[in-house]
Length: 510
Image 1 (cartoon, rainbow, N blue to C red):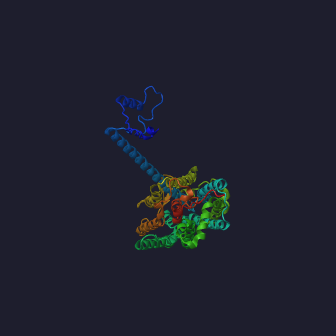
Image 2 (cartoon, rainbow, N blue to C red; image 1 turned 120 degrees about the vertical axis):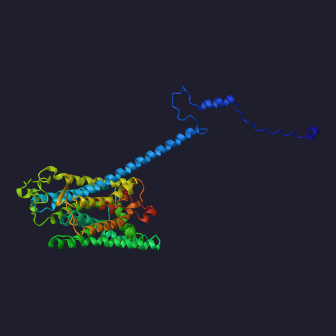
Image 3 (tube, rainbow, N blue to C red; image 1 turned 180 degrees about the horizontal axis):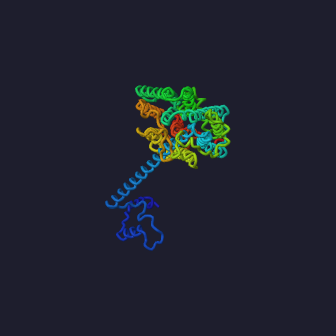
């Protein structure tokens, strides 16, 4: 026992050195063979290498990959440019055609030397062309109200919207059925640029407050100049050559119509101007409620606009026309010798609308061109092509229409009305060949620039891709008589509070 206790403990075993795995050449060959797809495997191999195994590619292969990538990018750029051009041409052409077809029907409507039944018929065609957008709005509102919108709009807010829409419709009817028939087409197009009076006044409250002092002063001066240019349209009756009775009526009808039309676009400009202040929190809350329940509001507002438009059109009928002729609107009246010898606005060789079914051609063209312009512009905004596919063509459409209306006659043509493709009939501008030619051109250009300043927000889109329509446009309808002005003034401009707080209108309230 003592001997066992005296023996020292055995030493610990030596540490085992780390073993290294040596892969022989045959093993490497086996791994390489396993990484390659088998010839007898019926399933196609996704890749020739494992996902975690590095491999070496040749420079030629990398160069081919770079070239293929550049080709794909070039192809995408070409397709994108082609799509941009398609949107640009469709919106521009449809806006110009819509304006030319409208002036064609107005030129036929304002001819008092034709049979009275034809005046009624042209008014009915213009009226139906203006009602089509309201019918589409009513159908859309019915679908959204019964499927998505569960909340009812506030009563006072609904009354306010109906009052504003009634005023807007009366102003538009007064413009189309009384003012435009009393003037030539170029002067009428000049007037259509002056439907921004209320937005111009509301622009004075913005003036780009987040910029430095010099930019704010410059913005305020340009906004003030836009207001004066919009108000200058009201003085056109003092310069055009009309009868004393028409001139006196235009002096109060024109300012009233322009104010009532521009009043309908108050929300597009007041939403971001006044709701930034805390004292207007109640007003901001009302606007949010309006956004949430707009389809239900326009369920009745669209029907009201149709009724008001029909009643106002009957009231604005020329005094020389008997209103009982509405019951005989589609009765064919033979053109007597008096009306076929050039006493009227058309002669027997140019007038394709009195004796044939082509009377409906400008009516159909006006409906489809306005509808195409509106829905194509909406798609351009949804796919983030707003600047080139929406803003630029709508801005240029007025200039293109002005060039067509002004220079179609030429300086040597003595006819009062000229046919353009046997579909559009345009009258002779009063300023053509007179001392007012230069003044008219300069005034139109300055007024066009003022409208660009007022609607400058359309050049800076803030919406996301494939945004919903209520985030792109304020009002759920378009006006076929002023389709390009309506789209520019109706374009939504996001409130900075909304962009900062991400406050979005809920369309599925319960």
